[in-house]
Amino acid sequence: MARHWQPVFDYASICAPSARAASMLATAASHKVLENLRQARTTAALRPLLLMTARQIGKAWAADERITALPELQNPDTGHAVPVDMFTIPENRGLIARAFQAMPDAAQCLLWHVEVEGEGISVPAGLLAVDPRGAAAQLEQAREILREGCLRAHLELAPDMECRHYNRLLDISLRRGGPLIPDIQAHLAECQHCRYGAEQLNQADGRLALLLAEGVLGPAARPYLDSRPARSNARPRTARTVPVPSAVRGAGRHSRGGRPRSLPRVTFQGRPLSLSHRGRGAVVTGLGVVTGLLVVAAVVTELWPEDDSHAGPAIPSGSVSAVPAPGSQLPSSPAPQPSTTSAALPTGPLSTRLRNVDSALCLDILDRMAQLGAEATMAPCSSSVTQQWVYENDGLLRSAAAPELCLNSHELDGVMVLALCADPAAANAADVRYDLTIQGDVIPRWNDGLAVVPTAAQTGATVVVKVRDGSLAQRWATDNVAVGSPRTRQSADSGNPPAEEVNTSPSDGKPAPPVGTGAVPDPHSTARHGEDPRSDVRRAGEDGSGSGPDARPPGPSPAAPGPRDAGGQDLHGPASSPPRETGHADGDDKRVKSSAASRPGSSADR
Image 1 (spheres, rainbow, N blue to C red):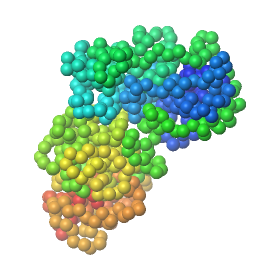
Image 2: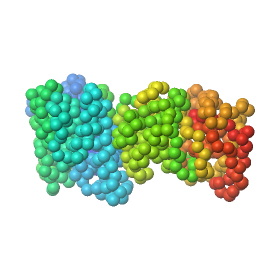
Image 3: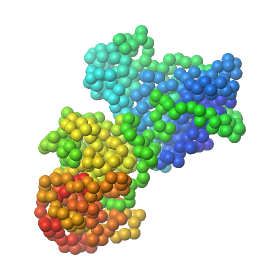
């Protein structure tokens, strides 16, 4: 926290009317973040988190007459408090604000320290404990994640279908560079929403630093950039405001007199900021008054409402496992860590369709166009290549129609879309990886309290991630495939030997459904109402708590070759091939003979 005090105090000095008020604001932000850190998995993105929290607190103070009446928060010369606008994110930076807050904290750390603070890649690499060469590659991925988030926010907030139509055209045209095509220019001249979107998507030529700072700090962005020591030696040649393409500056029905769509020039009521005059004295002054102001700040923080139109959660969304995308439901408590029980895995990637047990529809791609940013949807099951998915041993869920694209579950509103596949060491690796349960839940690895589910049991329904509830709507079945030999893996955390794979008949003695019918067994046999549905996560490379040749799952065993539980039972879909008879072998490949009479078919929701 000590390394971040000076930047937070610098920002507070820009906004606050006096040095005492700046110290109070910086102290309150530090106090608030320290309270919330126990809920976070990592502290990698502390700098933007502290600054964002300081802005939220300042906005709440400025909007509360009880707080602005305090002499400490008034300008000693004028007697006035700082206006709320000083802490408000402008409308033309709302997309980048949303996109940045939805990023993983490691990506936030890389972007902020390199782009805004102007520091070398070794600084955030040290904070993240990664090799600088690897951090440089992750930085490029972070830039792409931010851009995709802006594009997604523009699409979600589009006022009409025409704006949605121009969403992808804007992205392609701005990536290509050069003048925009006449159709886009004509639309931007009339539509404020798309004009703002074009400004924030135009992140090339050194514009990203100011854009990002404005999305987090609002009107104080430019003075804060000027105050950064790492930027003072080699100041980037950027204008007072972010340049806007000529076609973007047109006036139209949504504009007011054709005014520029960038932040206005503001006059700050705080003290002039000059690092050369303050130097280390500001740190001594700030730390000296922390003890005296902590009680005052703690009392004041209890008075402000937790409301900010662009603020989002106090902890960045990538830091807290229990925070799904905005607009989705939050679990009542932080999601637990994934269970250490394991599922047996197929020897290679599993290529299959994913059929929803409740609707009997298959997971598909909108308009059957496998392209970057395409939404996942539900469609009648067919042989279309866009319904084919490849589930790899490390949890990666890849589109067979576009092998370079994977299903991403960590978008702003929880909608599943196609995104670039990520390496296991990437900051966003968990966004495109999933775990499977015995019941057939598909669980994103970045938050095991969520599950993949269609919004409705009908064709064309959007596929999202929601809080896990164990319902049939959240369960999926695979195709009837029987290729390769499954295997088990032992967890490093468990002393149990590898479980033998066994094919058994249902423990309750009930007749099994016909093989290949995809019949849905009684859901109460495995997940009764009131039980925690998150207790049965099966992850690649983790061992099961039940082991040995007699271990069996609670119900009819699904068919090979999907992931198997500790008793050797497949997690997906009924079998279509006759049972195999194999001899015993040493190690993880022990097999127990099975007969057709004792191998029932089942659905992946077991």
